[in-house]
Amino acid sequence: MHGIPCRSGRTVSTEIPAASGVDRWDFGGQWVGSTQTHILELIKELGLETYPQFSIGKKVHHMGGVQAPKFAPSTSIPALSPLVLMDLTQLRWKIDRLLATVCVQEPSMTPGAVELDSMTLQSYIDKQVWTTELKEEMGLCSRSLFGMEPSQMSFLFFLMFAAAATGSAGEHSRLCTRANDKGRHPAAFSVSGRTRRVQERTTGLCCDGHMAGRVQ
Image 1 (cartoon, rainbow, N blue to C red):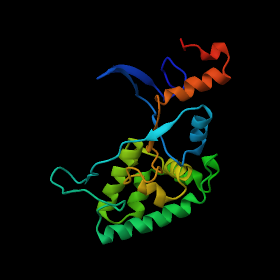
Image 2: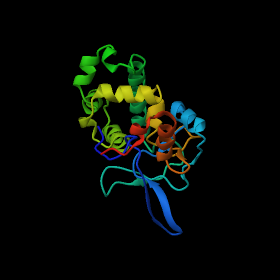
Image 3: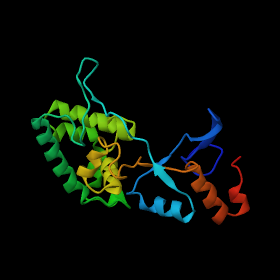
Image 4: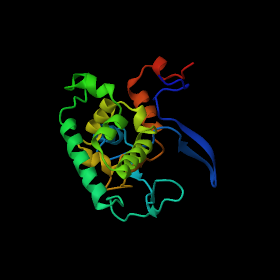
């Protein structure tokens, strides 16, 4: 549940002062990508438009503490040593095999669901990854994508998320490093007029008057 005085769940748009007067900003969910076909179809059906998210600049890859070196990779491949890349490759193979068995619609029906849900992403990483650098890299990805440590996340949830979003660990891992790959990144586009317009137009089309009112 969302304890906010509005419909539409995570999308919240607010008008705030700007250089030319007042502008509308998203404070909740705000981005879409080309793989999110359902919401893109709805946006088009409602007569709304999207525009590319600004992503020009230098990507900085930094982990391992203040004294650790910083890298600015020019490709989607992280600045990792050949040994760590080998470790990453075998991890992706293992996760890909598991993703092929995941039931996205009903994760509890996934083979071995109880066991997968009883472990965390961190415990799986500790068991399958043998380089310290890759363990740190996976922690960085977890914090960037999910906003939590891998030790706080069910491994089954991680698999369900990856299977629903992309279908392969290879694609999923690239979400950590690509700012915008021809729109495939889930934050590749924003909605013109802000995302809240999707809910406002949907409500106006399909909801009765009592459903369109403000939540008290």
